[in-house]
Amino acid sequence: MTPLSCPGVVAEPGALRTLRHALTAWVRAAGVEDDLAQDIVLASYEALANVADHAYGDDPGLVDLEAVLRPDRVEVVITDHGLWRLPVDDPNPVSLRGRGLLLLRASADRADITSGADGTVVTLGWQLSPVGSR
Image 1: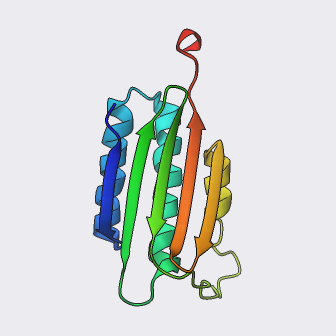
Image 2: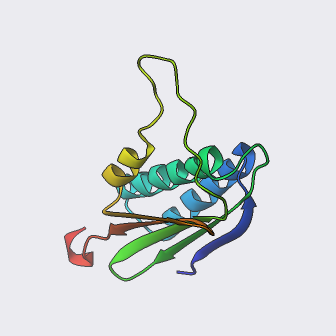
């Protein structure tokens, strides 16, 4: 299966939805089971949304997405080129914000996040069931 490579996408809602749709089509074409495919798309889209929320100021920057199917796993790497910004406090006592990293870690078998001066790289991974156990 050819990797999905989407470099230099503007981190704004319409473009991020387009990436989500492209990733959904890619995991389905890869033959990933439905439940796992949903986890892959959910965690990846959350990481993309975090780029829009945290990596750039008022002007959206760019995000790269790459998805690779390996014999035993799926990997998705999301890279921004901004600087991490702390979120604005939500005055709502029962906030719906601030759970993105929990969602990533709960939805993926592996969730590595590395931030630096050149941006943040989120590497997500899911183990695939052996062919005989499907």
